View 1 (cartoon, rainbow, N blue to C red):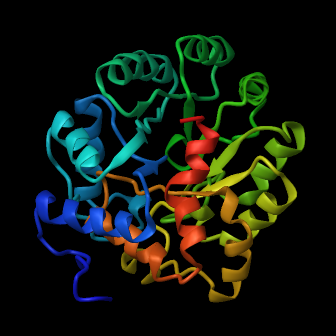
View 2: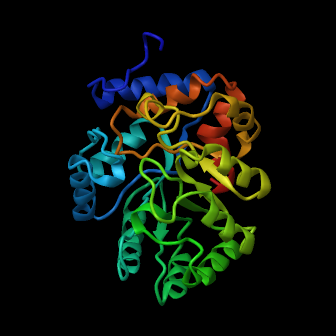
Length: 305
């Protein structure tokens, strides 16, 4: 890693790191970044998420996972803007019935008061899901989040089929955590997603974390379905490479899918500085055109920014 870069775990403050991010953008001539995988949610919910990471809950794979950005909500949004992130999401997700509609209500207010936020909504397999998904779409939701691991549900559940159909028809992307990392769940992996796509081939699924650790199996789906995309969240970083390494043999496929790979980071819930995700992508050596597309252009086109 070059000397000018902030290393993972470096305690450099946001001002120093913002300059590192600006240098990264300047090297590529980027007007900004678009991050499709950032977490904002009601504060009491987010604190519980942080408590779970601190306690090394089983879904973290038992890994030490210090949260780098524990600032208050407004300050966290300001940090992203300092980094030059021109659009970001509020990835929120339910873990039980009755929670999704409430989260969606909160998300309306957050999007309205937060410049740069792509209005985000979520869903869960339960009676009434189609109705509240439609409500969220009509309220202006531009992206949905689904979390198969935390929600512990089958994404091909019959209760979800009308909602998937609605989102496919509306062309609204869905960022979905469906890979089996950092710890597998009952319904994680490519097979349940393949069943969803067989019924809804136009659904704009964005597979979170590049589908880790089933990277190549999710590449198969992306190559089969033109509307499947992948986000880079935590992939290729030193932290992830230590336990779920990306297979080097798949780099040509990653390069070929360059128009359907989107920057994601998991901010603020990451155990290293934000800029490390950018440097991890840069050191793949897939070229500046690929990097520009991933860090900005692909998402700018998808969300018509």
